Image (cartoon, rainbow, N blue to C red; front, side, top):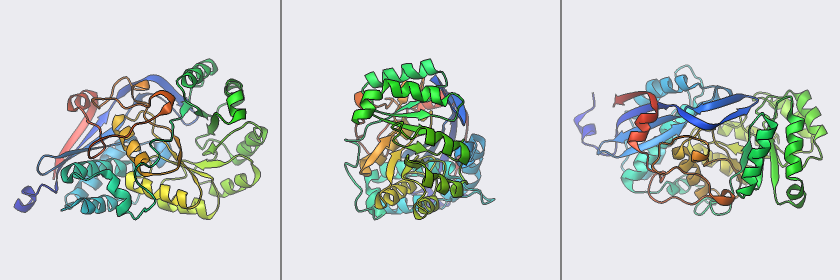
Length: 402
C-alpha cells in the first residue's frame, strides 16, 4: 500500500506497464545464430506521480545475454517492479543515481542486462521529462569529462548489414545500400557458403575497398571454433576486412587470445562484451581491438557510456550496434548515445521502416542518404511514442501500480 506521502509525490514511480510487441519485418534477417521475420521488442512504460510517462525498450536474445523474451518480462515484473517502489528523486541527478543502482541480476543470481536496459531507459525518460533536464547531463554526472555534445552524431555514418543467406539477394541489398550512399558494410558469416558471399561483396566493392572509400566487416556471431576461425581468417588475410566481429563464442576468451596472436585482422567483441567487468577483462588481456556496444545488451545507456569511456581511454574502436527489429524508441536512444560519445567509428541503427512494417513512434526514425543521422530535440529520448500504435502492436501486457 503506497503511503499518502508517496501518492502526493510527483517524483516517485506510480506504475509500470510492460508491452510485448510483434511487428512484421519487411525483410527476413538471417545469420548463423538466428533468423527472424517478426520483431518482438519489449516496451516498458513508467508513469510518475503527476502523470509524466517515460518509455524504454529492449530486445532479449538468448544467444546474446541468455535472456528470452518471456524471462525478461517475468524479471521486470518480479525483480524490477518491487525495486521501483523505493525510487524517488528530487532532481535529475538523483534520478540518474536511481537508474545507476538498478539490479543486474535476478533472484537466482542470473545476469539480466536486457531486462535492466528497458527499465533504466524508461526511468530516465520519465525523470528527464519531469525535471526538464536533458539526457546529455549523464556524462557529467558519470564524470566522463571528454564526452558531450555534439559527440559523433554529425560525423559518423550508419553501416549497411548484409544478412541474407541468398547470394543474389545479398548482392541486390548491397547494391541498393551503395546507391543510397552507404560506404561501411558488415557481412554476416558462419555459413557453408561464406566464401561465395564474401567474394561477391568484395567484387562489388573492389575499387572502393582498395581506395579506402568503403569498409567491409564480417560477423560470425560466435559460431566458429578456434580451428575454423584460424583457418578461415588465414585464407582471408588479404581480403581487406576492417574488423572480424565475435569470431568465437562468449566464454572462449582463452582461445580468443590464441586467435588474436595468429591472425592479421582486427577483432571486435560483441556477445563477449556485456558488462564493465567484461570490458576490463578484454582490455587487460589485449583480446580485441573493437567494442560493439548495444544498449539493450549492455544494461542501458549509463553502462553503455561507461563502456565507451573504457574503449576511448584504451584506443579501442567503438561501434554502436543495435538489435534487429528495434523500434524508433531504441533508435532514438542510440542517437542520444551518439550525441554524447565522440569518435564512434561504426553505427548499426535507425533502420525504422526500412526494416519494420510498423513502428510505435509518430515519426519512424531512420538514417537518411549516406547513412546520416540528425540530432533529436526535446527532453528524454526525443521521440514521441504513439499510445494507439503501441496498443495495436501489443500481443501481451501487464501493469503494476506501485
